[in-house]
Structures are given as C-alpha cells and as structure tokens.
Image (cartoon, rainbow, N blue to C red; front, top):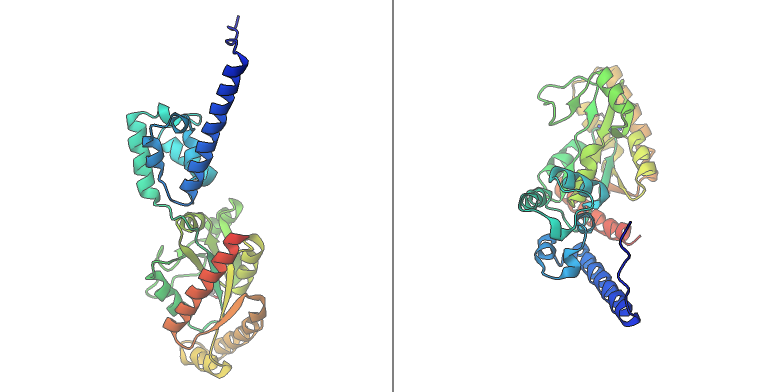
Length: 298
Ligand code: 5GP
C-alpha cells in the first residue's frame, strides 16, 4: 500500500504553496534572462538556488535562443542526459559533454534571416554571392543540381552534383526546401543546413531562379526576396552576348529567358540594381537588418 502523504496544517500548506510559486517565478525569470542572453546555462547550472537546481535540463536548453525543442533533444541525447533529468542530477561526465555541445553550438541570440536572390542570367549574381561568402554576416547555401560541372567547378563548393536518382531520392525524403527545373536540369536547396545556420544567427542566402523563389515565399513567408536587376536592358544584353561561348541560337534563348525573368521583378520584396557589387551588398545588409527587425516583432 502507498504511504499516505504527510498531513499538513493550513499554515504549512500555505507556506509550501508560496515556496512553490516563488520557485516558479525564479525559473521563469531565469528563462527570460537566458532568452535575452543576460545569463548563460552554466551560470544557472552553477547557481546554489534550490529552485534552479530543481529545473529540468530540457527546460534550460530550450530557453537558449536558437536551440529549441528538437536541438535540445538532440544535445541531450548526445550528452546522454535523460529527458526528465533535473540540473541537480547532472553528473560530471554529462556536464563535460554539455560544455562541449555548447561550445560547438555558439548560438547567436538573434536568428538569421532567409534571403532569396534571383534575377536574370548575366546580371552578376555569382559575383555577389562570391562577395557574400567572405562576409561573416551571411552564409550562402550550396545547391544540388543534376547538370554537369563546368570547368573549374567543384563538388560541395559550387554545387553538389547529383545524378537523377539521388535527386529523386532527396525529393522523396523531403530533403529540399525548394527545387525547380531550369534549362534542362534540376536544381534544389538542401534543407538541413538552412535551419542550422539561421539558428546560429547567420543570414542565409539562396541564389536561385524564380520558380524556386516562389516556392520559398510560400513555405517561409518571412523570407526576404530580392530581385537583382541590371542597370539597363542594353547592358544585360551586352553582358549575355559578350560571354561569347554560346551559339547564336543559345544566345537568343538566353535573351528570351532573361526577358521572362525580368518580368517577374514585381513579385519580389525589393529590386536592387547591380551598378556596383560593394554598394549592392551594403544595400542588401541594410534591407536584411530592417526586414529582420520587422519579422522578429511579428
Ligand atoms: P547555373 O547552371 O548557371 O549555375 O544556374 C542556372 C540557374 O539555376 C540560375 O538562375 C540559378 O540561380 C539557379 N539555381 C541555382 N541553384 C538553385 C536552386 O537550388 N534552386 C533553384 N530553384 N534554382 C537554382
């Protein structure tokens, strides 16, 4: 038979209730401090306050900006901490594992923004992404494609070069944020790294064609969609034809496609004109910053 709970006097019960609600308030205040990065999980773990020592490790981790439910679960699994473990029950080895995990995580209190860049061929998108790759505020996504590598392109750097069956398999496993067909090949944005880098506070840039941009808009309404336009149609024409590597038919097809692409500019949040790369990047940063503030208020 289960032992009966001890009988409490009214005063004792009131005191116990008051202590429990004070402990809840302490834990709530600590979660706010964690969310705003005023305190770290190790300040909480090392605190002598019994209210904090009774806090669950899962609750502690979930309050850290950028970690969330799924990552908290994954971290605890790797550190071999049971889902119901409280701070007071953490062992030395688990603590060391948690320290290692947090060092890797390096979470930024501010989530990054998903930035989609589209525009006609020849407008200079690859020069822009090259510059963004060396800017610590951004992380540029690496797409998968079924087209053949061009001279100098490296697998895992410029693209992941997939064969058709690997591409099909990734679609079936819902491994792409978006994918589309373009000029006889398929292109897709691998999903997994996107969430990772956003949680670390990086602005994640996708340089994709228009159909893909439309898909991102529908699955990620807070994404910032930027259309890159040439200074003029004449300039674009001369850049496209100036490549000199195309047959006249192919050059005509490129121009026709560019015309269709230019017509979709109105679907984007902003159009930036590529006069000069450095200036365009500064405009992009300021748009991303203001868009991010609005997105976080919503
Ligand atoms: P290229 O073959 O010249 O590297 O790229 C052709 C087109 O595919 C470009 O307009 C480029 O923006 C687009 N593209 C590259 N990666 C992706 C992707 O992951 N998804 C989509 N939808 N388009 C992409």
